[in-house]
Length: 463
View 1: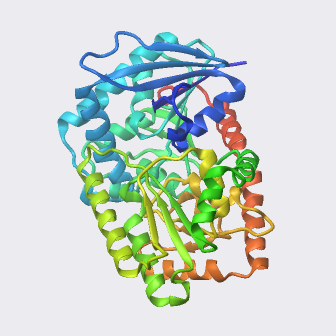
View 2: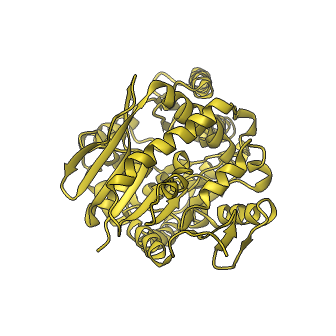
């Protein structure tokens, strides 16, 4: 059986706290847990000099191989290009991306260094699965070093329209590098359509109905593989955690009030200011909910070295303070705003307790929190998911209350509807969403992608 090799920007090493792992890290651990294999990427450590060779750690069936980054490479590759150019632009925030030639060169340099370190570790029949926007050029760099393995790529964030992507200097280089992969996976049909439009109208290539494309002298296939969660495992975790001390403490602190919960990285793509404003509007226009509903927003800080993230944190602190100062009573604080990380098990219990799960990104690749919230619910008395139409999960969880996050009044009304929704309707909507999650689990996502990757011919020049 071919060994699975996963490559991601950040490797969540076994010694790290599970609560710090994001959606990608959790998905990768699930993918490797049964089959075993190699996980390669950045260690999370910064040094003055680059790593001479990867550090290798054996942990059960998983081998971890990591490289440290230099401070300069981290600034250019991670902060400068990945998260100040690709991230805002792919999330349609053109006013926030800051292109500089030196950061683009640093992005390419780190991808080349990753490829140079990974290539000697590969065995001839390895399946290589590269993840996310930090590593778009990695497949091309591996090909330059003679790697003939089947190499697939999965994009966890949205893929923009041609008009948006064309605003980025060097977009041709990026998409040409992307086409070095045998298989490219996207979260939604909209992402695939954006890629297909670029191939046809910008690259002057071709793409067939099955996703097979020819462009830049290369051939490959692109498809839709919506990522998911371990549905049954998360449901069991939520049931156990509901009786745990953290959930009990939270429940007691609410004193019978309904809980609305949001859990997001502190990121401008998540629509957090609009969410706070919608909750404020709900309290102003639906006064029957005052002192009876609490919004708890968990927002661990991220990318604090990027100016836009520091500004967002200040904005949210100001909004939370303003709303609480205006509405709070001596025994009720409307918004609990927490800049800290909780373990997934603890969050599972919190989700189960919440009457409303608020997932309202301005644009998102999938958003696994939406799926986790649904899976965590008690089917006898489930809460209601309020979900942005711009999250990839909205294509699957269409029985949620789907909202436009730019319309704070409509978001407030959806929260109201979720709070007053009759039990039978909540049960019906929850059962429909759980049917989708049980059918499309993380196991199916992994198997579908790897099956498709095995079927692809090694990348080669187009005829």
